[in-house]
Length: 174
Image 1 (cartoon, rainbow, N blue to C red):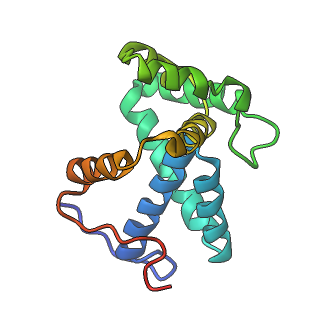
Image 2: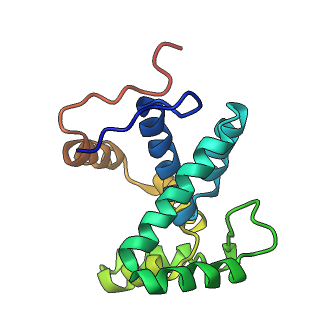
């Protein structure tokens, strides 16, 4: 184990661990095209003036990824190529609402076409709109369910995903 001396202007170990977790959350939101989560995390960081810490950690994460994925002599070439391809405006996650075919996804799920569902999700660069469309489709179908079926479905979902945990109603306590 290597023990280093903490410098006066260095982040404490706990702050580094917290910043790593926040940087990972930001990267996950970016990777999965979740614009809302990405913007929310970014707004929190800007409000706390933590831009330098997070930028440092994102750079460290990127450097680690390059180090593990490429041989040393190739890593710098990869980084230079990425720098050349960087977009002019990097202020937001790129979104593509046109490629999100939620109707096709619902049809594939209904038909049990697992490969089609996987293909649609994998081919959609921004899953925010795809999952948003799926959620909208489910919401439109709910009123069409016969009486009692919604309660059976939610009970089954709670059994599968929540164990015996009680999920309170949104209106509880109002």
